[in-house]
Length: 186
Image 1 (tube, one colour):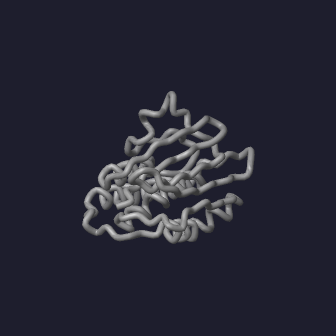
Image 2 (cartoon, rainbow, N blue to C red):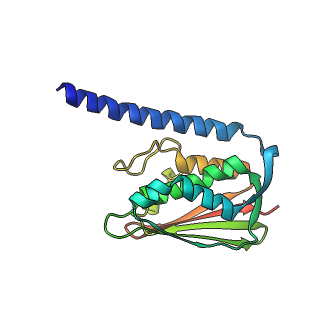
Image 3 (cartoon, rainbow, N blue to C red):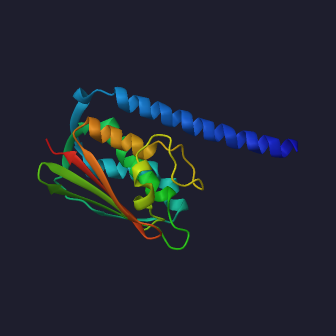
């Protein structure tokens, strides 16, 4: 019984730690200054995010492919954009299907006054018809069988909204999720 209690305590502490880290990141994103904007190379930022997630990529045997327009640079607060990219890639890894190898395609391209970052995965998908309104609510988890605090997509949306960007999603349950992020080019 003591061993079980210790394991449950450790699991609870890990969940609490994840939640605290999520709250901290959420608060940081809301107080970050937009005057810290700089010209950010998306390819370099994506490479850095993939390096941070290297262990998760290897553990999931994920296949990540890029179709990056070499000209795509955006004017954004680097730390905030790193958080956006990290959260989206982390979600793609976290919500992989157990029935197939995980493929993640990352693309960038220009569209009107925006640089578009598109991340498509063949994971478990999201039932947007039934859960779409909950997708961006803080501390809301759409599935309970994966780790996390339910902060990631809320944080991403908040960052983008505060910095003249936007996000939209397409998904089919059991097949794929496509996240499209619009970042101001100027």
